[in-house]
Image 1 (cartoon, rainbow, N blue to C red):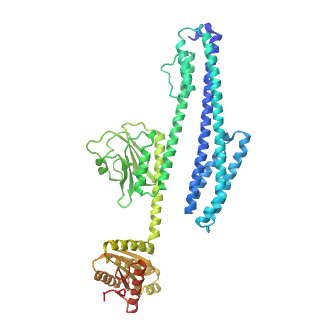
Image 2: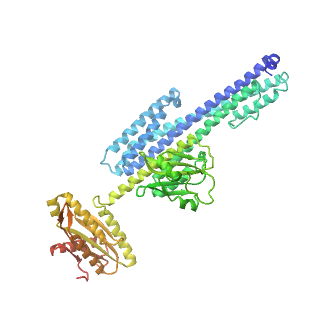
Image 3: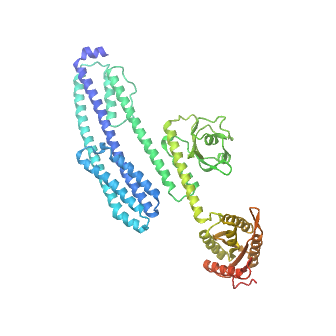
Length: 581
């Protein structure tokens, strides 16, 4: 075939082949240009998204005044600045001034933000006013610069497409005319190759990157068609990779957004699991689970699940470390892939269908916090891209778990005494209001006790504060032992405690509890081989006997307590107005 073309067609075939090659080359260049334009468009969209994220973090900072939001703003601005430094997006002189202006405005925004962050005297309203005066104009101007560049880029893309279409139309017309002349010179054996090449070129030019040739001829035209098909494969692979990357970003963003919602830990993990299962390129079965490590028993507990049968949920509710697939992943501390159910799948039940697994440990600072287990079709083809994404998800979950743990810790510290771990004055007031509301609805009797320790100051002065702390801890334990599980004891400060007794059968019951506390506190406390003696003076106010408001009950209980102190201490007394002696 090659000899026939060279000797019989000569210059005619050379012209036709040159035209086809030119068309293929121009198509490739056009595709490269379009890909570049799309990349530019994506980066400009990212700039807009970063600006929106900056504004959202700015609002969170203004409302909460937490430094973490400034860190988020700084990270987003750093991404924005890196895009601005890409001169390919600003590739002519008229845009350079806008680029430099945008970079300056980014730094100006951060300077204003740091000024607001550093001024601890500002109130919420003050921060908002400062933001409206300094931050908002800068942010709006940045948005205008990006929007203007995006508009220019879009117009350039339209112009490029229009020119490409006109040029391709000219090339195709010229090629058709040349083909009409050369058709009398070529043999019927090369006509199918030409027709296949034209159809394939048209599909690629039209953007159909899925186009494929059923059979590629072995002549010179076939070499060209093979190159064009490879070009289509490469472009399709690039497009698929961009789509997967976008899906990954959206999934991670959605996961981070849920961490800011006022959800319980279980709800957040259930939402996270649904997000993972809906990522299209993972090819997962619609079921999975998230386990968390319980440090108390050293086992994995299923906290969130989706699509699991009752048998699986029951059999896998608690998994010891090292057992079955999840336990192995937790012990090894790395992602494990299992193509099928084998001897490592230690938990079995009747009716289990063939399947595979991804088991991804949730690690924070090298320590296992849990495991994400996902179901796959048997003999699923694993990929580095899948595993990399799943590890990113696990790292994100680890951050969410750590943040949730810190929030719970801070919440506990805000409402509990550090030494005794008892509720503090704030939490006691909340419980008292709730208990009074319940007692009012049920017309129940409720008692409030104020307990002041006698001779405690003497212990601190003579034996030191370490001895005083030891006495407070032992006294706390003794008071708790005198109460029911439904009762509440709180440390109000120093050596003063408060107790709420709910749902009392009568007033005498409060007196019996108070006497029990007095007798228990009077017992000696051993400290470094010595016996320490203290006492307790208790004032009692009853709801609704002595008052219907919390402040009124507390005040009357306080007065009753001081009456006990004035009449010998180590006893209890009801507030005035009670029929108790």
